[in-house]
Picture 1 (cartoon, one colour):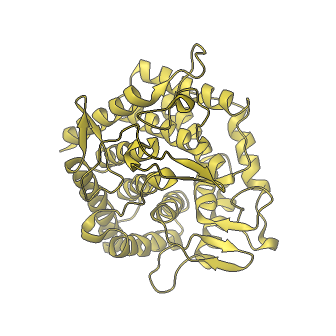
Picture 2 (cartoon, rainbow, N blue to C red):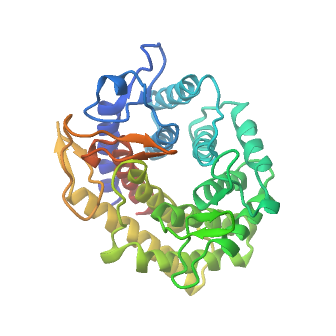
Length: 365
């Protein structure tokens, strides 16, 4: 079965690279992901580019390099990294800690797995997260600078990065403990979105579960402190019960939501491959995580559309994908988030999520 998932991951990679990867402003040696397909003129010119979508594109390229190392892909990874910084005004930094955390994770993996290194980027990003930690204000680190919203999508990936990079294990554990004490729903054991000025923002998104699973798995593997594995056991069971009805992860439409389930699949695959231990709970949890990834991937593949022989994934993995057209309303940036295109499948986020899922299935199978 492993070869089946390798082939499907390769097809997904080809779909995104052929439809979405373009030179940035015709500069030689550059490439970013055009945010829509079919694109309009503004998209082709990278008038819109979405920092955190590009970080996940980089992460998917690194997944592909891990699956099937190729010199030309390493070149592509290098171009993606270079172009991200150019498009971001020659800087790695922006005002959103969650954005920076996704980029930090992708850059750390690009260094470790693909040998594409930017020596100044990782210390600079790590410094952002370490300095943003404000327990006296109720955090956690905030969602963005000068903000009082402390949420799982910033703290989760930033803490995974700090656990992997440099000697920051203690801070990563503090962040995990903060999430566990502050954001866990006592009824479902799922992770709430965040806390704002002392009151819970009770939305429960798939990717919040994903990043906490990634963090606690990383800490379980690195510290051998029992509290982390038991949190993974509890959360995988909660995701299976509440977020994967019929075994398939729930979709969240297009725009930013297009990435949510793919991120969850990435970190469920990490649970399946990396959670240590041989107790009955450890084995059950790894098996359950793997089962959700594989059931989701099978369903997403079965419901895909095909364009020029390559897949178009649906925003919801348990129903037919819709072929995107240039008609209708496009994704737009509203108050710090990207809202869906009229046809969600038009959004790069949705196609990246499908690709991420196929790479996760390959890793977990």
